[in-house]
Length: 149
Image (cartoon, rainbow, N blue to C red; front, side, top):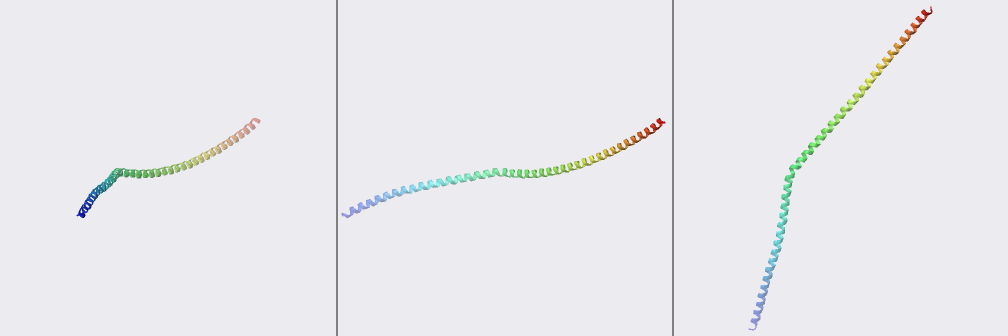
């Protein structure tokens, strides 16, 4: 019988160890559960941030898309306007250049005409002056010869 008490003691020790392990396993299970739940909470928070970020980006995109389209249309309009203005300015400069060239040509023709008129007038005046000189000289000769007689 002496062996039975030893068995009882060893059974008690085994039972107490199982109990200790049970507690430890329970604590281990709770610790692991806490770690997993914290990890899951972090993952959930991360997913929530990503979702909020996605919603924000979609909202911003939805709000900015019409603005971006408007800005693109304004850019196209401004580009077309600038091209039209440039072509208009080019045509205006071409027309101005032609008008200036025409004006210069007309001024040259007019000045040539005035020079010809002036030369003709000078020539006529010279001819009239010679004729008057000739008449005066012939009258003086006639008057001088009549006066001398």
